[in-house]
Length: 274
Image (cartoon, rainbow, N blue to C red; front, side, top):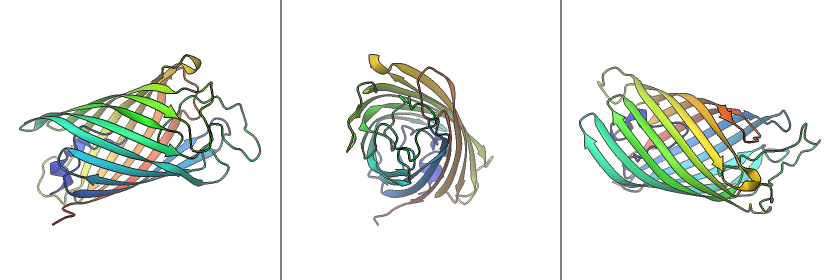
């Protein structure tokens, strides 16, 4: 089984998950690297995200992710981890097209302070209200994904709710949000190959993703909408390289970073149980 056939290439979004799952009985290994400028210090932040993915069956897949960065501490250190599960509950398949829906949930346990620890003090006041479960904060997130494939174009949308909780050694400050709504709209286009001849052909996919969030707490209300163009290469239908740049289009939420780069390498192993 090959990833280019079982999970349609242009549905392998870089910044979001599609409603489709990876093939059953398969294992994926990822290493992501996010690079961003931190507003409070002017320094470059780096966050590594090693990840293991398991296709339990055709409807269920699981992710286990670790996080390490220099974002909230003066030196690079481990921050914690998260577990992600996605269950596809609807499939409507047609020749060269399909529509799918899935439900997802993520839980994160993070060992970070809510205010960054700086060796020489912050360059400017830290007023960030953009919390996340991908290395910065503990909490749970769940929602619905809908994905439509139309030949070489794939469209996907997400709507979810996030509840932020106390970190391992630090409680949520009173002026920080505890509740947020997240939403996204993603488009992926298969550019190469023009015609499939073998699974060994290199795939080139182009993406544009809109990523938004709204804090619903009165003490920390605010919203933003980011745009994230991305390029993806898939080699031998098993290995992929993702490159993405994310920046804010609109918003009024105080944030520690308004743009970031993502570089991610992934390798998939199929038929792990004979």
